[in-house]
Amino acid sequence: MIHFDEVALRYGSGAETLSDVSFELEPGSFHYVVGPSGAGKSSLLKLMYLAMAPTRGRISVFGRDVADIPRDEMAILRRRIGVVFQEFRLLAHLNVFQNVALPLKVTGKREPKWQAHVRELLEWVGLGDKIEADPLTLSGGEQQRVAIARAVITRPNLIIADEPTGNVDDRMAIRLMYLFEELNKVGTTVVVATHNESLVRRFPHPLMQLGDGRLDILPPPD
Amino acid sequence: MFFGSDLPLKKDASARFLPLLIGFMVFLAALALAGALSMNTVVNDWRSAFTGKLTVQVPDDGGSSDQIQRARVESVVDLLRAQGGVEAVELLSEAETRALIEPWLGSGSSLQELPLPSLIAVTISEAANPDLTAISIKLQEAAPGAVIDDHQRWLGEVLNNLRSLQLMALGLLIVVGVSAMLAVVYVTRTGLAIHHEVIELLHLIGAKDAYVARQFQRQALSMGLTGGAIGLFIAVPVVLLIGTLLAGGETAIFPQVRFGLLEWGLMAALPVLTAVIAMITARRTVLRSLTDLS
View 1: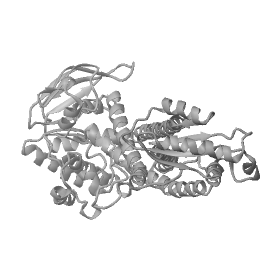
View 2: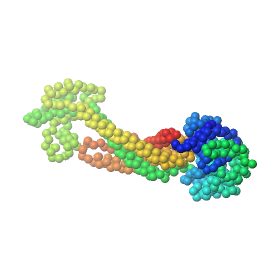
View 3: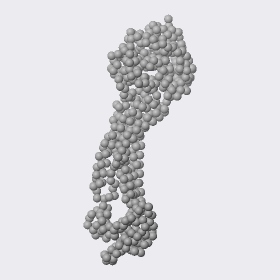
View 4: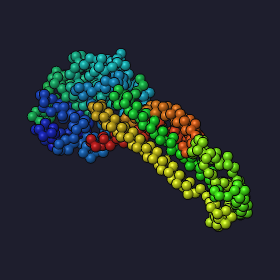
């Protein structure tokens, strides 16, 4: 699914944020990315969801070396990846429904085909009554759920979530984790960056531990 | 749940500025086009008016009596009628001759004092190709000083000048078009810079460059049509007003605005053409900029 080989990332002329990172994620796996703030979790995720190119090393996603993928094919590859951004990145000029439906729209599919699907998902994340709301009028937790709904609406092969439960209460956090678990059970590869140790214990999966720019793969916590 | 643009381009300051700029461009382009089309009408009118026409001038030598002058003119008329291919020979009266000059020089009293030659209008059949040199020699024998004019020399000069004016008008059209394109490029690049975060998000959720370009090209088309319609709406009455003023003048050297369906169709096509150019320019600008950024 994802293969990193001796990957390094450096911003400008500073020190390497990630150094010699190598790992392979199998299809259908579930991993947490953990580590202290500034360890490079977000940078690792950005490389995985193809927002950046590595300074050195090779990255393969879905069996394709990303350095060799033409621009238009990269877009098609990205459609197979659902991303929950840490800062949500909802579009303020679109309502909740339009934000969630955006990944479907960019594929060129017609609205009637996916309208019911979007409504159903919004009901599931508890935003059935906020379908036409302006995202800026929602609480942080509600915005996060919109962002999660947008990431999973296309039923992607790979879901990458950066602190997806950071702004919701424990009950909603567990509910959202169940959503990721359900998607994982049907074959979706899931990578979740989190600081929430209780969730990691409650839903045990292997850890991608980052520290000083290095990565270690650890077994699920007991 | 109808979707508009994924980018809030309508809220940009450029969305208000560009239609006005395009409107002004289309207004100028419409005036230039109207000028070029009017001159085209004049060129065609004059060319057809002087095809197969000759004018013979028999000057008054100043010392002869009216009888002698009339005899000279009649001999010239007889000579012309005897030539092969000549369909009609018409001696113009003095009043008709003055009427011909009046649009160029006005109707003041000085016109009445001008000594005028006798003018003979000759019509030649389309198939005929008379030897003007031979006729001219015969005319000199019949009435020394008589001049034959097939109008080609001065007509050629006038038509060349009109064509130059037409080229200038078309050049102005091109300048206006290029200016509009540059404005669209500037506005599009500004939009790309303002909305770069939204564009990055669109890319991350799987949008191709062409999808992003469509957002801009739709906006450019809309702004082009709006601005174009405004420009044409103002230009048409101005063109009609200029046409009315020219038609009411005493001189015949200015072109007349006599537009048919084709001419009005070309004028109406201006905003559409401008909008399409704006759309294509926006698309190419976005695609090129995104490729350069990658």
